Length: 216
Image (cartoon, rainbow, N blue to C red; front, side, top):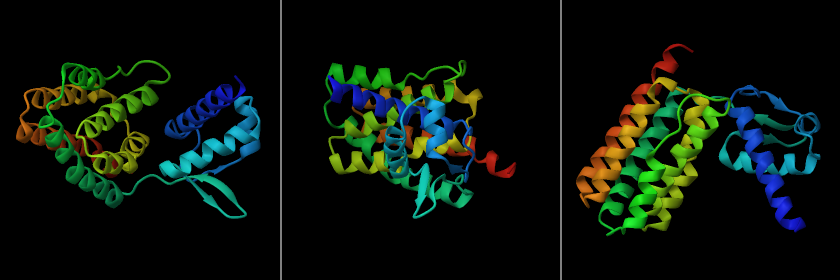
Protein backbone atom coordinates (compact mmCIF):
# COMPACT_ATOMS: atom_id res chain seq x y z
CA UNK A 1 0.00 0.00 0.00
CA UNK A 2 2.90 2.37 0.53
CA UNK A 3 3.68 2.89 -3.21
CA UNK A 4 0.05 3.82 -3.92
CA UNK A 5 0.11 6.34 -1.09
CA UNK A 6 3.32 7.77 -2.50
CA UNK A 7 1.74 8.31 -5.90
CA UNK A 8 -1.30 9.96 -4.32
CA UNK A 9 0.85 12.28 -2.21
CA UNK A 10 2.99 13.29 -5.18
CA UNK A 11 -0.08 14.01 -7.30
CA UNK A 12 -1.69 16.01 -4.50
CA UNK A 13 1.42 18.14 -4.05
CA UNK A 14 1.70 18.65 -7.79
CA UNK A 15 -1.92 19.87 -7.94
CA UNK A 16 -1.42 22.13 -4.92
CA UNK A 17 1.73 23.78 -6.28
CA UNK A 18 0.17 24.13 -9.72
CA UNK A 19 -2.81 25.91 -8.14
CA UNK A 20 -0.51 28.32 -6.29
CA UNK A 21 1.15 29.24 -9.56
CA UNK A 22 -2.08 29.49 -11.53
CA UNK A 23 -3.67 31.67 -8.85
CA UNK A 24 -0.55 33.89 -8.76
CA UNK A 25 0.05 33.15 -5.10
CA UNK A 26 3.47 32.36 -6.47
CA UNK A 27 4.04 35.37 -8.69
CA UNK A 28 5.38 35.01 -12.25
CA UNK A 29 9.16 35.11 -12.14
CA UNK A 30 9.32 34.59 -8.37
CA UNK A 31 11.89 32.27 -6.82
CA UNK A 32 10.46 29.14 -5.19
CA UNK A 33 11.82 28.08 -1.82
CA UNK A 34 11.35 24.32 -1.61
CA UNK A 35 11.66 24.11 2.17
CA UNK A 36 9.17 26.94 2.73
CA UNK A 37 6.75 25.40 0.25
CA UNK A 38 7.07 22.01 1.94
CA UNK A 39 6.24 23.59 5.31
CA UNK A 40 3.24 25.36 3.82
CA UNK A 41 1.90 22.09 2.41
CA UNK A 42 2.87 20.08 5.51
CA UNK A 43 4.94 17.59 3.52
CA UNK A 44 8.61 16.72 3.20
CA UNK A 45 10.71 18.47 0.51
CA UNK A 46 10.88 15.32 -1.64
CA UNK A 47 7.34 15.41 -3.13
CA UNK A 48 7.74 19.17 -3.63
CA UNK A 49 10.86 18.57 -5.71
CA UNK A 50 9.03 15.89 -7.70
CA UNK A 51 6.11 18.25 -8.29
CA UNK A 52 8.43 21.02 -9.45
CA UNK A 53 10.13 18.65 -11.90
CA UNK A 54 6.72 17.89 -13.43
CA UNK A 55 5.79 21.57 -13.51
CA UNK A 56 9.06 22.31 -15.30
CA UNK A 57 7.95 19.97 -18.09
CA UNK A 58 4.63 21.86 -18.14
CA UNK A 59 6.53 25.10 -18.63
CA UNK A 60 5.16 26.65 -15.44
CA UNK A 61 8.49 26.70 -13.61
CA UNK A 62 12.10 26.85 -14.72
CA UNK A 63 15.23 25.52 -13.03
CA UNK A 64 18.56 27.31 -12.98
CA UNK A 65 21.65 25.35 -11.87
CA UNK A 66 22.93 26.43 -8.44
CA UNK A 67 19.97 28.78 -8.09
CA UNK A 68 16.85 26.60 -8.03
CA UNK A 69 13.31 26.90 -9.30
CA UNK A 70 11.29 29.97 -10.23
CA UNK A 71 7.82 30.46 -11.67
CA UNK A 72 8.08 31.25 -15.35
CA UNK A 73 7.08 34.73 -16.57
CA UNK A 74 3.69 35.22 -18.18
CA UNK A 75 3.39 34.69 -21.90
CA UNK A 76 4.16 37.66 -24.09
CA UNK A 77 1.65 38.57 -26.77
CA UNK A 78 3.96 37.11 -29.43
CA UNK A 79 4.25 33.82 -27.52
CA UNK A 80 0.50 33.73 -27.00
CA UNK A 81 -0.20 34.23 -30.69
CA UNK A 82 2.36 31.55 -31.62
CA UNK A 83 0.67 29.13 -29.24
CA UNK A 84 -2.75 29.81 -30.76
CA UNK A 85 -1.29 29.46 -34.25
CA UNK A 86 -0.02 25.99 -33.36
CA UNK A 87 -3.37 25.00 -31.90
CA UNK A 88 -5.12 26.17 -35.08
CA UNK A 89 -2.92 23.79 -37.06
CA UNK A 90 -3.37 20.77 -34.80
CA UNK A 91 -6.79 20.82 -33.19
CA UNK A 92 -9.12 21.32 -36.19
CA UNK A 93 -7.32 18.41 -37.84
CA UNK A 94 -7.86 16.29 -34.72
CA UNK A 95 -11.56 17.19 -34.66
CA UNK A 96 -11.97 16.30 -38.34
CA UNK A 97 -10.30 12.93 -37.80
CA UNK A 98 -12.48 12.25 -34.74
CA UNK A 99 -15.59 13.02 -36.82
CA UNK A 100 -14.48 10.52 -39.42
CA UNK A 101 -13.48 7.82 -36.95
CA UNK A 102 -16.91 6.24 -36.53
CA UNK A 103 -17.11 6.83 -32.79
CA UNK A 104 -19.50 4.71 -30.79
CA UNK A 105 -22.11 5.97 -28.33
CA UNK A 106 -19.83 5.54 -25.32
CA UNK A 107 -17.03 7.56 -26.90
CA UNK A 108 -19.42 10.34 -27.92
CA UNK A 109 -20.95 10.42 -24.45
CA UNK A 110 -17.49 10.76 -22.93
CA UNK A 111 -16.66 13.66 -25.25
CA UNK A 112 -19.98 15.36 -24.50
CA UNK A 113 -19.40 14.99 -20.77
CA UNK A 114 -15.96 16.52 -21.13
CA UNK A 115 -17.48 19.48 -23.00
CA UNK A 116 -19.36 20.62 -19.91
CA UNK A 117 -17.47 23.18 -17.84
CA UNK A 118 -17.74 24.08 -14.13
CA UNK A 119 -19.02 27.50 -13.12
CA UNK A 120 -16.99 30.45 -11.86
CA UNK A 121 -17.82 30.05 -8.16
CA UNK A 122 -15.65 28.47 -5.50
CA UNK A 123 -12.06 28.85 -4.36
CA UNK A 124 -10.77 26.30 -6.89
CA UNK A 125 -12.74 27.60 -9.86
CA UNK A 126 -9.70 28.37 -12.00
CA UNK A 127 -8.09 24.98 -11.40
CA UNK A 128 -11.37 23.14 -12.00
CA UNK A 129 -12.11 25.02 -15.22
CA UNK A 130 -8.56 24.57 -16.50
CA UNK A 131 -8.59 20.83 -15.80
CA UNK A 132 -11.96 20.29 -17.48
CA UNK A 133 -11.09 22.42 -20.49
CA UNK A 134 -7.87 20.45 -20.92
CA UNK A 135 -9.82 17.19 -20.55
CA UNK A 136 -12.13 18.17 -23.42
CA UNK A 137 -9.37 19.15 -25.82
CA UNK A 138 -7.21 16.16 -24.93
CA UNK A 139 -10.17 13.77 -25.29
CA UNK A 140 -11.01 15.22 -28.69
CA UNK A 141 -7.40 14.74 -29.80
CA UNK A 142 -7.34 11.19 -28.45
CA UNK A 143 -10.49 10.31 -30.38
CA UNK A 144 -8.74 11.33 -33.59
CA UNK A 145 -7.01 7.97 -33.41
CA UNK A 146 -3.67 9.61 -34.21
CA UNK A 147 -1.35 9.15 -31.24
CA UNK A 148 1.27 11.60 -32.50
CA UNK A 149 -1.38 14.27 -33.06
CA UNK A 150 -2.79 13.67 -29.57
CA UNK A 151 0.65 13.87 -27.98
CA UNK A 152 1.43 17.11 -29.82
CA UNK A 153 -1.77 18.70 -28.52
CA UNK A 154 -1.02 17.59 -24.97
CA UNK A 155 2.58 18.80 -25.11
CA UNK A 156 1.48 22.33 -25.91
CA UNK A 157 0.10 22.57 -22.33
CA UNK A 158 -1.91 25.44 -23.76
CA UNK A 159 -4.61 25.40 -21.12
CA UNK A 160 -2.23 25.87 -18.22
CA UNK A 161 -0.62 28.86 -19.86
CA UNK A 162 -3.84 30.47 -21.06
CA UNK A 163 -5.63 30.36 -17.74
CA UNK A 164 -2.56 31.42 -15.83
CA UNK A 165 -2.35 34.38 -18.19
CA UNK A 166 -5.93 35.54 -17.84
CA UNK A 167 -9.15 33.94 -16.69
CA UNK A 168 -12.23 35.57 -18.25
CA UNK A 169 -14.86 34.19 -15.89
CA UNK A 170 -17.68 35.91 -17.77
CA UNK A 171 -17.10 33.53 -20.68
CA UNK A 172 -17.55 30.16 -18.96
CA UNK A 173 -20.90 29.54 -20.63
CA UNK A 174 -19.66 30.69 -24.03
CA UNK A 175 -16.75 28.26 -23.92
CA UNK A 176 -19.04 25.36 -23.01
CA UNK A 177 -21.41 26.23 -25.87
CA UNK A 178 -18.50 26.27 -28.30
CA UNK A 179 -17.38 22.87 -27.01
CA UNK A 180 -20.83 21.42 -27.60
CA UNK A 181 -20.93 22.72 -31.16
CA UNK A 182 -17.75 20.76 -31.79
CA UNK A 183 -19.27 17.64 -30.22
CA UNK A 184 -22.43 17.99 -32.33
CA UNK A 185 -20.36 18.11 -35.51
CA UNK A 186 -18.25 15.13 -34.43
CA UNK A 187 -21.42 13.19 -33.56
CA UNK A 188 -22.85 13.98 -36.97
CA UNK A 189 -19.66 12.60 -38.56
CA UNK A 190 -19.21 15.93 -40.35
CA UNK A 191 -15.44 16.38 -40.55
CA UNK A 192 -15.57 19.81 -42.19
CA UNK A 193 -18.04 21.16 -39.62
CA UNK A 194 -16.01 19.69 -36.75
CA UNK A 195 -12.84 21.35 -38.01
CA UNK A 196 -14.63 24.66 -38.55
CA UNK A 197 -16.28 24.59 -35.11
CA UNK A 198 -12.90 23.92 -33.50
CA UNK A 199 -11.28 26.68 -35.50
CA UNK A 200 -14.04 29.10 -34.50
CA UNK A 201 -13.71 28.13 -30.83
CA UNK A 202 -9.94 28.65 -30.77
CA UNK A 203 -10.22 31.95 -32.62
CA UNK A 204 -12.93 33.21 -30.27
CA UNK A 205 -10.91 32.13 -27.23
CA UNK A 206 -7.91 34.00 -28.62
CA UNK A 207 -9.99 37.13 -29.06
CA UNK A 208 -11.32 36.85 -25.49
CA UNK A 209 -7.77 36.77 -24.14
CA UNK A 210 -6.16 39.44 -26.32
CA UNK A 211 -7.52 42.43 -24.32
CA UNK A 212 -5.35 41.27 -21.42
CA UNK A 213 -2.26 42.37 -23.33
CA UNK A 214 -3.68 45.85 -23.83
CA UNK A 215 -3.99 46.32 -20.08
CA UNK A 216 -0.52 45.09 -19.14
